[in-house]
Length: 469
Image (cartoon, rainbow, N blue to C red; front, side, top):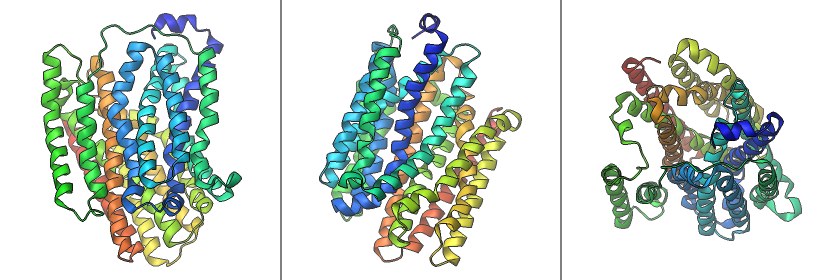
C-alpha cells in the first residue's frame, strides 16, 4: 500500500481496518501466553516427553522467526490484504489441527505449521498501520497497537486458565487452540469487506535459499538442545548440532552470493558492518533469552510442584501483565529524556524482582499464589520498561533506508532468542526436576535468566558508549 491507498480510505473506515489488524495481532499475542498455562495439562494428557513439551513452544518460534521476513516480502509482492487474509486462514486452520492432535510429535508438527502461518499474518499488521496512518493520527494508532500487545499477555494467561479449568464440552486443553477458529473466521470476513486492496511493490524479491538455510540451521541447533538429553547426547545429536553451526556459518556467505547475483538477500548485509547494531542485537538476544523461558519454568513449577490449578497459575501472572502495560506506557516518555539508560534500569528492576522471587521460593516451602504475584509485579514492570523502547534504541543506529530490513532482523533475533531460551533454560529445569529437585531446578533457571539479563546490560552499556541514543 502507499499514500494513495490511505487517501482513498475514509477516516472512519481506516479505524475499522485498524481494529481488524490489531485483532489478528491480539490473537497472535494471546496464543503465545495461553499455551504457557495449558502446557502441563497437555504434557500429561498426550504423555509427551520433556523434549516434546519444550518443542511445542520452541518450534513455533523457529517457524515464525525464520519466515517472518519472507512473509513481509510476500505482502509487498502480492499485496498486504491478500497475504493477510491467507495468513489468518492458515493460522486458524493450523490452530484447528493443533487442537485435534493425538500425540506429542503431531502437536510439534502442527505448531511448526502454525508458526509459518503467523509469519504470513503478523508482518501485514504493521505494514497496514504504517500506510493507513501517515498523518497526525499515527501516534494514536500505534498507541492502540501497543495497548493491545500488553492486554494480549494478560488475556492469554487468564483465558488459558479458564478454558483448561472449565473443560468446556470436555475439550480440556484443546479449547485453547479451538478458540482461534471462530475469531479467525470473523477477522477474515471483516478484512475481505473492509480492507483496501493495495498495489504491489515493484522490485521486491524473495530469498528462498536464505530462508531455508536459516530455518535448517536454527532447527539443527535448537533441536539438538531440545532432544539432546532425551537421546543421551548421542553422536547423532552432536552431528546435527555441528551441521547447524556449519549452515549458520555459511549463511552470510550465501547472502553475499544472493546479493552478487542481483537478488534481494534476507538480511541487509550493510547492517552487519554496524558495530553498535550488532551489540544491540546481542542485547536483544540476552533480553529475550530470559523471556518466554522464564514463564515456562515458573508455570511448570507452580502446577507440578506447588499443585496450583491452571486457573490459579494464570491469575498469578495478571498483576505482572498490568504492571507491564503501565511500564510500557511510561517508558516511551522516559526513554526520550534518559535514552538507553532506561533499558539498563529496566533490566535492573527485573533482576530485583527475580531475586525477590528466588528468596520467596527459598524461604517459603509452599508460597500462596497471591504471594508469588508480589515479586512478579516488580519483574513485569522492569520487563515493560525494556521491551517497549528496546527496538527503537537498537534501530536508532540504522540508516532510514534500511529501517525495514533492520526491523526484520530485530524481530527474527528476538524470536530465535525466545526459542533458544526455551530449549536451554527449559531443558535445564526439566533435567534437574527429573532428579527430584523442582525447587533447585527453578532456582538454577532463575540464575540462568539473571546471567542472560546481565549480559544484556553489559552489551547495552557498550552500545551506549559506541553511539548516541
